[in-house]
Image (cartoon, rainbow, N blue to C red; front, side, top):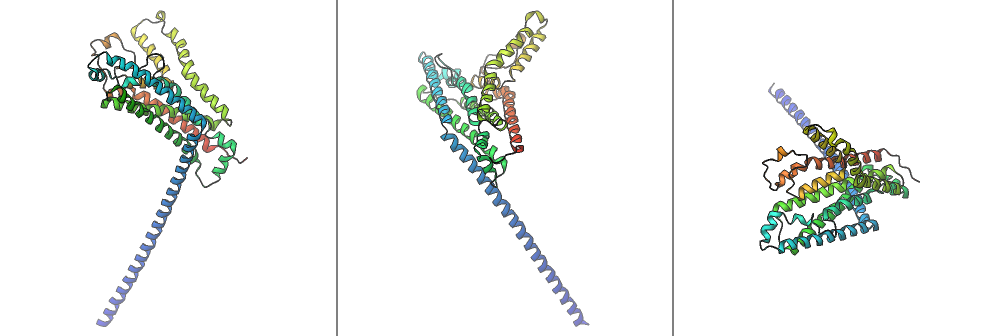
Length: 368
């Protein structure tokens, strides 16, 4: 009996060991499958990232070797250095009149005036960027898609195992990267030359104000870039998309303020206004109409950032200003003041890109 029990125990142990070995084999097989899947996914992600970076690198190189972009960049650089010269001349005259130059610079935010002041011969840096920046954005995006389609390279590119959205995303990222490099380099050169010529370094607050101002320029140009890409998706001819972008730029830059002025005249006429509240409401209504323009949003934001003495962007009554201390606004308060404008600019930029993205993904692209 003892031997039979022993044999049964042995058989059970053998069975248990076989089950254990089978389980180990199953676990090993499962782990190897999971590892193989992870490895395959990692390889696919790496290959996809490499393809996307290759598209961005190719587009970035094309922009740098394009004559229209080179000419536009040269114009922007020349005009900005011209505005720097006029600003420095004006500031040096102010500093030369006093022995307490550094004290005056700190109190008057003289370093920020490099970007806003002019002696009248040339517009300031902010004015040049507000005028030429949209043209640069449109020039970068107006033929992003339709030129590839007309040459037949788009169908050949999409016949490769490349996700379609890599094409439009790569073009946008390359153009945005060019803007980032250009304006950050320009801004830091501006600051370096300002320190060398004036001899007064910027304070931390002035530095962060300039940094945020450069970011704002990139967001503003990104809007016009996305508008150009949108037109390049909608229109088959590059000339049509370029003229459409320039027409919208002209409308907001020249005609929109005239139209709002025509609308505001009867609204703000003294005969039709009976109370102060009514006048304030109508002023705010006109102001909100102006804020539908991206140019106006950019102008309000840059003015507040580079001029700390600006304490409000709305309509104020005499009672609200009574007793107010006249002093510069801290940096964080200036950011809070322009937060709606910045959010509005980012929103219209994202809307333009989303429409262009959806239209491009749904378009039928055939080989010629």
